[in-house]
Image (cartoon, rainbow over all chains, first blue to last red; front, side, top):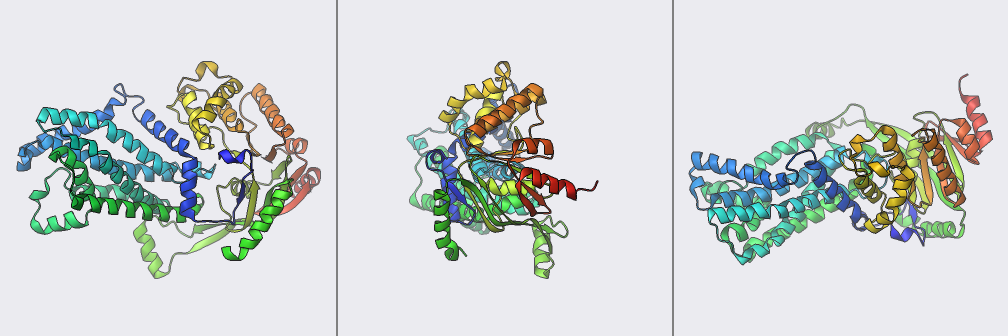
Length: 279
Length: 264
Protein backbone atom coordinates (compact mmCIF):
# COMPACT_ATOMS: atom_id res chain seq x y z
CA UNK A 1 0.00 0.00 0.00
CA UNK A 2 2.92 2.32 0.60
CA UNK A 3 3.53 2.49 -3.11
CA UNK A 4 0.19 4.12 -3.84
CA UNK A 5 1.43 7.55 -2.77
CA UNK A 6 3.88 8.18 -5.55
CA UNK A 7 2.96 6.02 -8.47
CA UNK A 8 -0.79 5.60 -8.35
CA UNK A 9 -1.69 1.96 -8.40
CA UNK A 10 -4.20 0.89 -10.95
CA UNK A 11 -6.66 -1.76 -9.99
CA UNK A 12 -7.91 -3.64 -13.00
CA UNK A 13 -10.59 -6.23 -12.34
CA UNK A 14 -9.62 -8.07 -15.51
CA UNK A 15 -6.07 -8.51 -14.53
CA UNK A 16 -5.73 -11.67 -12.57
CA UNK A 17 -2.28 -12.93 -12.03
CA UNK A 18 -1.48 -15.94 -9.95
CA UNK A 19 -4.11 -15.67 -7.24
CA UNK A 20 -2.09 -17.52 -4.62
CA UNK A 21 0.95 -15.29 -5.14
CA UNK A 22 -1.18 -12.13 -5.24
CA UNK A 23 -2.71 -13.12 -1.92
CA UNK A 24 0.73 -13.76 -0.47
CA UNK A 25 1.94 -10.33 -1.55
CA UNK A 26 -1.13 -8.59 -0.14
CA UNK A 27 -0.93 -10.50 3.13
CA UNK A 28 2.64 -9.30 3.45
CA UNK A 29 1.62 -5.70 2.73
CA UNK A 30 -1.05 -5.99 5.39
CA UNK A 31 1.18 -7.63 8.00
CA UNK A 32 0.31 -4.87 10.43
CA UNK A 33 -3.33 -5.95 10.18
CA UNK A 34 -2.39 -9.52 11.08
CA UNK A 35 -0.50 -8.20 14.07
CA UNK A 36 -3.40 -5.98 15.14
CA UNK A 37 -5.98 -8.75 14.75
CA UNK A 38 -3.88 -11.14 16.82
CA UNK A 39 -3.41 -8.43 19.42
CA UNK A 40 -7.16 -7.88 19.50
CA UNK A 41 -7.83 -11.60 19.98
CA UNK A 42 -5.35 -11.90 22.83
CA UNK A 43 -6.40 -8.68 24.57
CA UNK A 44 -10.14 -9.20 24.35
CA UNK A 45 -10.26 -12.87 25.18
CA UNK A 46 -9.73 -12.45 28.90
CA UNK A 47 -10.36 -8.74 29.18
CA UNK A 48 -13.11 -8.95 31.74
CA UNK A 49 -11.60 -11.73 33.84
CA UNK A 50 -9.60 -10.91 36.94
CA UNK A 51 -6.65 -13.13 36.13
CA UNK A 52 -6.59 -11.96 32.53
CA UNK A 53 -3.90 -13.39 30.33
CA UNK A 54 -2.80 -15.76 33.13
CA UNK A 55 -5.67 -17.97 31.94
CA UNK A 56 -3.61 -18.81 28.89
CA UNK A 57 -1.26 -20.54 31.31
CA UNK A 58 -3.86 -21.85 33.73
CA UNK A 59 -6.06 -23.47 31.10
CA UNK A 60 -3.64 -26.17 29.94
CA UNK A 61 -2.46 -26.69 33.53
CA UNK A 62 -6.01 -27.30 34.72
CA UNK A 63 -6.72 -29.66 31.85
CA UNK A 64 -3.52 -31.54 32.57
CA UNK A 65 -4.42 -31.85 36.23
CA UNK A 66 -7.89 -33.19 35.50
CA UNK A 67 -6.58 -35.69 32.98
CA UNK A 68 -3.75 -36.84 35.20
CA UNK A 69 -6.06 -37.49 38.11
CA UNK A 70 -8.71 -39.14 35.94
CA UNK A 71 -6.34 -41.35 34.01
CA UNK A 72 -4.11 -42.40 36.88
CA UNK A 73 -7.24 -43.55 38.70
CA UNK A 74 -9.05 -45.17 35.82
CA UNK A 75 -6.38 -46.33 33.38
CA UNK A 76 -3.05 -47.84 34.15
CA UNK A 77 -1.12 -45.57 31.80
CA UNK A 78 -1.55 -42.79 34.28
CA UNK A 79 1.25 -44.56 36.12
CA UNK A 80 3.88 -44.02 33.45
CA UNK A 81 6.81 -41.99 34.59
CA UNK A 82 6.19 -38.26 34.11
CA UNK A 83 2.69 -38.72 32.76
CA UNK A 84 1.67 -35.11 33.56
CA UNK A 85 4.43 -33.85 31.25
CA UNK A 86 3.47 -36.37 28.62
CA UNK A 87 -0.16 -35.32 28.63
CA UNK A 88 0.58 -31.60 28.87
CA UNK A 89 2.93 -31.61 25.88
CA UNK A 90 0.34 -33.51 23.88
CA UNK A 91 -2.42 -31.16 24.94
CA UNK A 92 -0.47 -28.03 24.04
CA UNK A 93 0.23 -29.26 20.52
CA UNK A 94 -3.33 -30.47 20.06
CA UNK A 95 -4.87 -27.30 21.48
CA UNK A 96 -2.77 -25.21 19.13
CA UNK A 97 -4.10 -27.16 16.18
CA UNK A 98 -7.74 -27.27 17.21
CA UNK A 99 -7.92 -23.65 18.33
CA UNK A 100 -6.15 -22.08 15.38
CA UNK A 101 -8.07 -24.04 12.75
CA UNK A 102 -11.39 -23.35 14.45
CA UNK A 103 -10.57 -19.67 14.87
CA UNK A 104 -9.55 -19.30 11.21
CA UNK A 105 -12.88 -20.66 10.15
CA UNK A 106 -15.05 -18.85 12.69
CA UNK A 107 -13.37 -15.48 12.11
CA UNK A 108 -13.86 -15.76 8.39
CA UNK A 109 -17.46 -16.97 8.46
CA UNK A 110 -18.73 -14.68 11.22
CA UNK A 111 -16.24 -11.86 10.81
CA UNK A 112 -16.99 -11.91 7.12
CA UNK A 113 -19.00 -8.71 7.34
CA UNK A 114 -15.77 -6.82 7.22
CA UNK A 115 -14.76 -8.48 3.97
CA UNK A 116 -17.98 -7.12 2.52
CA UNK A 117 -17.14 -3.56 3.36
CA UNK A 118 -13.48 -2.97 2.69
CA UNK A 119 -10.71 -4.72 0.88
CA UNK A 120 -8.42 -6.66 3.17
CA UNK A 121 -6.46 -9.77 2.26
CA UNK A 122 -8.78 -12.70 2.86
CA UNK A 123 -6.05 -14.71 4.55
CA UNK A 124 -5.64 -12.07 7.29
CA UNK A 125 -8.01 -13.83 9.68
CA UNK A 126 -6.33 -17.21 9.35
CA UNK A 127 -2.87 -15.69 9.69
CA UNK A 128 -3.98 -13.78 12.77
CA UNK A 129 -5.37 -16.98 14.31
CA UNK A 130 -2.00 -18.66 13.82
CA UNK A 131 -0.20 -15.67 15.32
CA UNK A 132 -2.50 -15.83 18.36
CA UNK A 133 -1.83 -19.54 18.70
CA UNK A 134 1.92 -18.98 18.50
CA UNK A 135 1.78 -16.47 21.33
CA UNK A 136 -0.28 -18.87 23.44
CA UNK A 137 1.92 -21.91 22.89
CA UNK A 138 5.04 -19.85 23.59
CA UNK A 139 3.60 -18.57 26.86
CA UNK A 140 2.60 -22.11 27.74
CA UNK A 141 6.25 -23.08 27.84
CA UNK A 142 6.36 -21.55 31.30
CA UNK A 143 3.82 -23.90 32.96
CA UNK A 144 5.29 -26.73 30.91
CA UNK A 145 8.77 -26.26 32.37
CA UNK A 146 7.21 -25.91 35.80
CA UNK A 147 5.44 -29.24 35.45
CA UNK A 148 8.64 -30.85 34.20
CA UNK A 149 10.49 -29.63 37.26
CA UNK A 150 7.79 -30.78 39.64
CA UNK A 151 7.34 -34.23 38.10
CA UNK A 152 11.07 -34.81 37.71
CA UNK A 153 11.29 -34.96 33.92
CA UNK A 154 14.81 -34.08 32.89
CA UNK A 155 15.19 -30.73 31.15
CA UNK A 156 17.75 -30.98 28.35
CA UNK A 157 19.12 -28.55 25.75
CA UNK A 158 16.89 -30.35 23.23
CA UNK A 159 14.16 -27.98 24.42
CA UNK A 160 15.81 -25.32 22.28
CA UNK A 161 14.64 -27.32 19.26
CA UNK A 162 10.98 -26.66 20.17
CA UNK A 163 10.47 -23.71 17.77
CA UNK A 164 10.92 -26.10 14.83
CA UNK A 165 8.04 -28.47 15.65
CA UNK A 166 5.94 -25.45 16.58
CA UNK A 167 6.54 -23.80 13.20
CA UNK A 168 5.78 -27.01 11.31
CA UNK A 169 2.61 -27.43 13.33
CA UNK A 170 1.71 -23.81 12.55
CA UNK A 171 2.22 -24.36 8.82
CA UNK A 172 0.06 -27.47 8.91
CA UNK A 173 -2.63 -25.72 10.95
CA UNK A 174 -2.67 -22.76 8.56
CA UNK A 175 -3.10 -25.07 5.60
CA UNK A 176 -5.92 -27.02 7.24
CA UNK A 177 -7.48 -23.81 8.58
CA UNK A 178 -7.60 -22.22 5.13
CA UNK A 179 -9.00 -25.38 3.60
CA UNK A 180 -11.87 -25.75 6.06
CA UNK A 181 -12.51 -21.99 6.05
CA UNK A 182 -13.08 -22.14 2.32
CA UNK A 183 -15.49 -25.04 2.69
CA UNK A 184 -17.25 -23.38 5.64
CA UNK A 185 -17.97 -20.22 3.64
CA UNK A 186 -19.98 -22.29 1.21
CA UNK A 187 -21.41 -24.70 3.79
CA UNK A 188 -21.73 -23.01 7.19
CA UNK A 189 -22.75 -26.31 8.81
CA UNK A 190 -19.23 -27.53 8.33
CA UNK A 191 -18.23 -25.30 11.23
CA UNK A 192 -20.41 -27.38 13.57
CA UNK A 193 -19.41 -30.68 12.06
CA UNK A 194 -15.77 -29.81 12.46
CA UNK A 195 -16.05 -29.70 16.26
CA UNK A 196 -17.33 -33.28 16.35
CA UNK A 197 -14.71 -34.28 13.85
CA UNK A 198 -12.00 -32.72 16.03
CA UNK A 199 -13.12 -34.67 19.08
CA UNK A 200 -12.90 -37.92 17.17
CA UNK A 201 -9.58 -36.95 15.69
CA UNK A 202 -8.16 -36.18 19.12
CA UNK A 203 -8.99 -39.68 20.38
CA UNK A 204 -7.31 -41.13 17.30
CA UNK A 205 -4.15 -39.21 18.19
CA UNK A 206 -1.88 -40.21 21.09
CA UNK A 207 -2.50 -36.99 22.99
CA UNK A 208 -3.56 -38.31 26.37
CA UNK A 209 -2.62 -41.97 25.98
CA UNK A 210 0.75 -43.51 25.09
CA UNK A 211 0.92 -44.94 21.59
CA UNK A 212 2.01 -48.29 23.09
CA UNK A 213 -1.44 -49.06 24.48
CA UNK A 214 -2.95 -49.17 21.02
CA UNK A 215 -3.73 -52.58 19.56
CA UNK A 216 -1.22 -53.43 16.87
CA UNK A 217 -3.65 -53.07 13.97
CA UNK A 218 -4.90 -49.60 14.81
CA UNK A 219 -1.43 -48.46 15.90
CA UNK A 220 -0.26 -49.00 12.33
CA UNK A 221 -3.05 -46.87 10.88
CA UNK A 222 -2.66 -44.08 13.39
CA UNK A 223 1.09 -43.81 13.25
CA UNK A 224 1.05 -43.88 9.46
CA UNK A 225 -1.98 -41.97 8.25
CA UNK A 226 -2.79 -39.56 11.04
CA UNK A 227 -0.83 -36.39 10.27
CA UNK A 228 -1.35 -35.05 13.77
CA UNK A 229 0.52 -38.08 15.15
CA UNK A 230 3.71 -36.75 13.55
CA UNK A 231 3.27 -33.21 14.85
CA UNK A 232 2.32 -34.18 18.40
CA UNK A 233 5.23 -36.61 18.53
CA UNK A 234 7.70 -34.13 17.08
CA UNK A 235 6.67 -31.53 19.63
CA UNK A 236 6.80 -34.04 22.47
CA UNK A 237 10.20 -35.56 21.76
CA UNK A 238 12.41 -32.69 22.99
CA UNK A 239 10.19 -32.25 26.05
CA UNK A 240 9.28 -35.70 27.27
CA UNK A 241 12.14 -37.73 25.85
CA UNK A 242 14.68 -34.92 26.11
CA UNK A 243 16.34 -35.63 22.77
CA UNK A 244 16.37 -34.37 19.22
CA UNK A 245 14.11 -36.15 16.73
CA UNK A 246 15.52 -38.56 14.18
CA UNK A 247 15.18 -37.82 10.49
CA UNK A 248 12.47 -40.48 10.28
CA UNK A 249 10.50 -38.51 12.84
CA UNK A 250 11.26 -35.11 11.36
CA UNK A 251 10.89 -35.50 7.59
CA UNK A 252 7.28 -36.72 7.42
CA UNK A 253 6.19 -33.73 9.53
CA UNK A 254 8.12 -31.34 7.31
CA UNK A 255 6.66 -32.75 4.10
CA UNK A 256 3.09 -32.95 5.42
CA UNK A 257 3.16 -29.41 6.76
CA UNK A 258 4.43 -27.92 3.51
CA UNK A 259 2.01 -29.90 1.37
CA UNK A 260 -0.93 -28.90 3.59
CA UNK A 261 0.12 -25.26 3.54
CA UNK A 262 0.50 -25.08 -0.24
CA UNK A 263 -2.77 -26.91 -0.93
CA UNK A 264 -4.70 -24.90 1.66
CA UNK A 265 -3.33 -21.56 0.51
CA UNK A 266 -3.86 -22.33 -3.16
CA UNK A 267 -7.40 -23.64 -2.69
CA UNK A 268 -8.34 -20.67 -0.53
CA UNK A 269 -6.89 -18.10 -2.94
CA UNK A 270 -8.66 -19.66 -5.91
CA UNK A 271 -12.00 -19.37 -4.16
CA UNK A 272 -11.56 -16.16 -2.23
CA UNK A 273 -13.07 -13.96 -4.95
CA UNK A 274 -16.38 -15.66 -4.33
CA UNK A 275 -16.36 -15.08 -0.57
CA UNK A 276 -17.84 -11.61 -0.81
CA UNK A 277 -20.70 -13.08 -2.80
CA UNK A 278 -21.44 -15.61 -0.08
CA UNK A 279 -20.88 -14.01 3.27
CA UNK B 1 -10.01 -15.04 -21.64
CA UNK B 2 -6.98 -13.56 -20.01
CA UNK B 3 -4.65 -14.13 -22.89
CA UNK B 4 -7.11 -12.56 -25.30
CA UNK B 5 -7.55 -9.41 -23.31
CA UNK B 6 -3.95 -9.09 -22.22
CA UNK B 7 -2.75 -6.79 -25.04
CA UNK B 8 -5.79 -4.57 -24.56
CA UNK B 9 -5.17 -4.39 -20.86
CA UNK B 10 -1.77 -2.81 -21.16
CA UNK B 11 -3.00 -0.38 -23.78
CA UNK B 12 -5.98 0.68 -21.67
CA UNK B 13 -3.92 1.03 -18.57
CA UNK B 14 -1.51 3.16 -20.51
CA UNK B 15 -4.29 5.38 -21.77
CA UNK B 16 -5.60 5.66 -18.24
CA UNK B 17 -2.22 6.73 -17.00
CA UNK B 18 -1.88 9.25 -19.79
CA UNK B 19 -5.38 10.55 -19.42
CA UNK B 20 -4.80 11.99 -16.01
CA UNK B 21 -8.39 12.94 -15.53
CA UNK B 22 -10.01 9.57 -15.42
CA UNK B 23 -9.77 7.77 -12.09
CA UNK B 24 -12.65 5.31 -12.23
CA UNK B 25 -13.86 3.57 -15.33
CA UNK B 26 -16.52 0.89 -15.58
CA UNK B 27 -16.92 -1.03 -18.80
CA UNK B 28 -20.16 -3.01 -18.90
CA UNK B 29 -19.58 -3.99 -15.31
CA UNK B 30 -21.99 -6.68 -14.22
CA UNK B 31 -22.43 -8.55 -10.99
CA UNK B 32 -24.46 -11.70 -10.79
CA UNK B 33 -25.52 -13.16 -7.50
CA UNK B 34 -26.52 -16.76 -7.46
CA UNK B 35 -29.31 -17.39 -5.04
CA UNK B 36 -30.14 -21.04 -4.46
CA UNK B 37 -33.81 -21.90 -4.89
CA UNK B 38 -33.84 -23.49 -1.49
CA UNK B 39 -31.22 -23.04 1.11
CA UNK B 40 -28.87 -26.01 1.11
CA UNK B 41 -27.05 -25.91 4.39
CA UNK B 42 -25.03 -29.03 4.62
CA UNK B 43 -22.32 -30.49 2.54
CA UNK B 44 -23.97 -33.88 2.50
CA UNK B 45 -27.25 -32.48 1.27
CA UNK B 46 -25.39 -30.49 -1.37
CA UNK B 47 -23.52 -33.55 -2.63
CA UNK B 48 -26.72 -35.58 -2.83
CA UNK B 49 -28.49 -32.84 -4.76
CA UNK B 50 -25.51 -32.28 -6.97
CA UNK B 51 -25.49 -35.92 -7.96
CA UNK B 52 -29.20 -35.79 -8.59
CA UNK B 53 -28.69 -32.67 -10.65
CA UNK B 54 -30.99 -30.78 -8.36
CA UNK B 55 -28.87 -27.82 -7.37
CA UNK B 56 -30.84 -24.98 -8.87
CA UNK B 57 -30.04 -21.36 -8.70
CA UNK B 58 -31.89 -18.18 -9.42
CA UNK B 59 -29.36 -15.96 -10.98
CA UNK B 60 -29.95 -12.35 -10.38
CA UNK B 61 -28.05 -9.45 -11.81
CA UNK B 62 -27.36 -6.88 -9.12
CA UNK B 63 -25.56 -4.86 -11.76
CA UNK B 64 -25.97 -5.19 -15.47
CA UNK B 65 -23.80 -3.56 -18.11
CA UNK B 66 -22.98 -0.44 -16.19
CA UNK B 67 -20.52 1.81 -17.96
CA UNK B 68 -19.37 5.26 -16.96
CA UNK B 69 -16.27 7.00 -15.84
CA UNK B 70 -15.44 9.46 -13.11
CA UNK B 71 -12.84 12.18 -13.46
CA UNK B 72 -10.26 13.27 -10.95
CA UNK B 73 -11.56 15.70 -8.37
CA UNK B 74 -15.19 15.18 -9.21
CA UNK B 75 -17.86 14.72 -6.61
CA UNK B 76 -19.92 12.08 -8.26
CA UNK B 77 -23.42 11.36 -7.02
CA UNK B 78 -25.12 8.01 -7.08
CA UNK B 79 -28.87 7.77 -6.66
CA UNK B 80 -31.51 5.07 -6.87
CA UNK B 81 -34.02 3.26 -4.74
CA UNK B 82 -33.12 0.76 -2.06
CA UNK B 83 -31.89 -2.44 -3.64
CA UNK B 84 -31.15 -0.75 -6.94
CA UNK B 85 -27.53 -1.85 -6.85
CA UNK B 86 -25.79 1.25 -5.52
CA UNK B 87 -23.95 -0.58 -2.77
CA UNK B 88 -22.96 -3.36 -5.12
CA UNK B 89 -21.54 -0.74 -7.46
CA UNK B 90 -19.50 0.77 -4.66
CA UNK B 91 -18.21 -2.67 -3.67
CA UNK B 92 -17.05 -3.29 -7.20
CA UNK B 93 -15.11 -0.03 -7.15
CA UNK B 94 -13.74 -0.63 -3.66
CA UNK B 95 -12.27 -3.99 -4.73
CA UNK B 96 -14.54 -5.93 -2.42
CA UNK B 97 -16.35 -7.69 -5.25
CA UNK B 98 -14.85 -8.67 -8.54
CA UNK B 99 -17.38 -8.10 -11.33
CA UNK B 100 -18.85 -11.26 -12.83
CA UNK B 101 -18.51 -9.74 -16.26
CA UNK B 102 -17.22 -6.50 -17.65
CA UNK B 103 -14.36 -4.56 -16.27
CA UNK B 104 -13.49 -2.03 -13.61
CA UNK B 105 -10.44 0.20 -13.58
CA UNK B 106 -9.58 2.28 -10.55
CA UNK B 107 -6.58 4.51 -10.14
CA UNK B 108 -5.24 5.17 -6.67
CA UNK B 109 -6.23 4.39 -3.12
CA UNK B 110 -9.91 3.92 -2.44
CA UNK B 111 -11.15 4.71 1.04
CA UNK B 112 -14.60 3.31 1.64
CA UNK B 113 -16.70 5.04 4.20
CA UNK B 114 -19.45 2.50 4.24
CA UNK B 115 -20.33 2.25 7.88
CA UNK B 116 -18.37 3.94 10.59
CA UNK B 117 -16.64 1.89 13.17
CA UNK B 118 -17.53 -1.34 11.41
CA UNK B 119 -14.36 -3.03 12.60
CA UNK B 120 -14.43 -1.65 16.13
CA UNK B 121 -14.31 -3.96 19.11
CA UNK B 122 -16.28 -2.89 22.19
CA UNK B 123 -13.80 -4.33 24.70
CA UNK B 124 -10.82 -2.49 23.25
CA UNK B 125 -10.03 1.09 24.14
CA UNK B 126 -10.44 3.95 21.70
CA UNK B 127 -6.69 4.01 21.16
CA UNK B 128 -6.49 0.28 20.43
CA UNK B 129 -9.42 0.53 18.04
CA UNK B 130 -7.84 3.40 16.14
CA UNK B 131 -4.74 1.30 15.51
CA UNK B 132 -6.80 -1.77 14.59
CA UNK B 133 -8.99 0.22 12.20
CA UNK B 134 -5.96 1.88 10.66
CA UNK B 135 -4.45 -1.54 10.01
CA UNK B 136 -7.66 -2.58 8.25
CA UNK B 137 -7.24 0.42 5.98
CA UNK B 138 -3.73 -0.78 5.15
CA UNK B 139 -1.56 1.44 7.32
CA UNK B 140 1.46 0.26 9.24
CA UNK B 141 2.35 1.04 12.81
CA UNK B 142 4.51 4.11 12.12
CA UNK B 143 1.93 5.66 9.80
CA UNK B 144 -0.67 5.25 12.52
CA UNK B 145 1.64 6.75 15.14
CA UNK B 146 1.90 9.81 12.94
CA UNK B 147 -1.85 10.04 12.42
CA UNK B 148 -3.00 9.19 15.90
CA UNK B 149 -3.07 12.63 17.51
CA UNK B 150 -4.86 14.17 14.54
CA UNK B 151 -7.53 11.49 14.68
CA UNK B 152 -8.17 12.02 18.38
CA UNK B 153 -8.20 15.80 17.95
CA UNK B 154 -10.73 15.61 15.14
CA UNK B 155 -12.99 13.26 17.09
CA UNK B 156 -12.56 15.43 20.22
CA UNK B 157 -12.28 12.36 22.38
CA UNK B 158 -9.14 13.20 24.35
CA UNK B 159 -10.53 12.21 27.72
CA UNK B 160 -12.02 8.92 26.58
CA UNK B 161 -9.41 7.57 24.25
CA UNK B 162 -8.14 5.03 26.80
CA UNK B 163 -11.59 3.89 27.87
CA UNK B 164 -13.13 0.75 26.34
CA UNK B 165 -15.41 1.49 23.42
CA UNK B 166 -18.40 -0.11 25.13
CA UNK B 167 -18.49 2.91 27.41
CA UNK B 168 -18.88 5.27 24.43
CA UNK B 169 -22.15 6.77 23.35
CA UNK B 170 -23.21 5.95 19.81
CA UNK B 171 -22.33 9.47 18.75
CA UNK B 172 -18.80 9.17 20.15
CA UNK B 173 -18.45 5.82 18.46
CA UNK B 174 -19.43 7.31 15.11
CA UNK B 175 -17.17 10.32 15.57
CA UNK B 176 -14.16 8.13 16.17
CA UNK B 177 -15.09 6.00 13.18
CA UNK B 178 -15.41 9.00 10.92
CA UNK B 179 -12.11 10.43 12.10
CA UNK B 180 -10.17 7.25 11.42
CA UNK B 181 -11.85 6.55 8.13
CA UNK B 182 -11.30 10.00 6.68
CA UNK B 183 -7.76 10.43 7.92
CA UNK B 184 -6.50 8.19 5.18
CA UNK B 185 -5.21 10.48 2.49
CA UNK B 186 -7.29 8.74 -0.16
CA UNK B 187 -7.41 9.32 -3.91
CA UNK B 188 -11.01 8.22 -4.06
CA UNK B 189 -13.41 8.50 -1.17
CA UNK B 190 -16.62 6.52 -1.05
CA UNK B 191 -19.38 7.94 1.11
CA UNK B 192 -22.48 5.85 1.53
CA UNK B 193 -25.22 7.81 3.27
CA UNK B 194 -23.29 8.50 6.41
CA UNK B 195 -23.53 12.18 7.02
CA UNK B 196 -26.39 11.66 9.39
CA UNK B 197 -24.09 10.66 12.25
CA UNK B 198 -23.17 12.73 15.23
CA UNK B 199 -24.69 15.97 16.40
CA UNK B 200 -25.12 19.01 14.21
CA UNK B 201 -21.73 20.46 15.03
CA UNK B 202 -20.01 17.24 14.10
CA UNK B 203 -21.99 16.99 10.89
CA UNK B 204 -20.81 20.45 9.92
CA UNK B 205 -17.27 19.43 10.72
CA UNK B 206 -17.61 16.30 8.57
CA UNK B 207 -18.90 18.41 5.71
CA UNK B 208 -15.91 20.70 6.08
CA UNK B 209 -13.56 17.78 5.93
CA UNK B 210 -15.24 16.53 2.77
CA UNK B 211 -14.85 19.98 1.26
CA UNK B 212 -11.19 19.96 2.19
CA UNK B 213 -10.85 16.68 0.33
CA UNK B 214 -12.54 18.27 -2.62
CA UNK B 215 -10.06 21.13 -2.61
CA UNK B 216 -7.20 18.66 -2.49
CA UNK B 217 -8.48 17.08 -5.65
CA UNK B 218 -9.80 13.90 -4.05
CA UNK B 219 -12.48 12.20 -6.08
CA UNK B 220 -15.61 11.51 -4.09
CA UNK B 221 -18.33 8.99 -4.83
CA UNK B 222 -21.36 10.00 -2.90
CA UNK B 223 -24.47 7.92 -2.30
CA UNK B 224 -27.51 9.48 -0.75
CA UNK B 225 -31.27 9.46 -0.77
CA UNK B 226 -31.27 13.13 0.04
CA UNK B 227 -31.63 14.85 -3.33
CA UNK B 228 -30.90 18.27 -1.86
CA UNK B 229 -27.51 17.13 -0.60
CA UNK B 230 -26.73 15.48 -3.93
CA UNK B 231 -27.80 18.54 -5.85
CA UNK B 232 -25.72 20.89 -3.74
CA UNK B 233 -22.56 18.76 -3.80
CA UNK B 234 -22.30 16.82 -7.03
CA UNK B 235 -21.65 18.08 -10.52
CA UNK B 236 -22.25 14.72 -12.07
CA UNK B 237 -24.68 12.00 -11.01
CA UNK B 238 -25.65 8.52 -12.07
CA UNK B 239 -29.06 7.01 -11.49
CA UNK B 240 -29.24 3.27 -11.08
CA UNK B 241 -32.38 1.22 -11.16
CA UNK B 242 -32.64 -2.55 -10.89
CA UNK B 243 -28.95 -2.89 -11.52
CA UNK B 244 -29.02 -0.86 -14.68
CA UNK B 245 -27.69 2.54 -15.38
CA UNK B 246 -30.62 4.80 -16.28
CA UNK B 247 -28.87 8.09 -16.88
CA UNK B 248 -25.53 9.56 -16.13
CA UNK B 249 -24.88 13.24 -16.59
CA UNK B 250 -25.40 16.63 -15.07
CA UNK B 251 -26.90 16.34 -11.62
CA UNK B 252 -29.98 18.52 -12.04
CA UNK B 253 -31.04 16.64 -15.18
CA UNK B 254 -30.54 13.25 -13.60
CA UNK B 255 -32.48 14.22 -10.50
CA UNK B 256 -35.30 15.63 -12.61
CA UNK B 257 -35.53 12.38 -14.53
CA UNK B 258 -35.37 10.37 -11.32
CA UNK B 259 -38.16 12.39 -9.72
CA UNK B 260 -40.23 12.04 -12.86
CA UNK B 261 -40.10 8.26 -12.57
CA UNK B 262 -41.13 8.13 -8.93
CA UNK B 263 -44.80 7.55 -8.14
CA UNK B 264 -46.35 10.75 -6.93
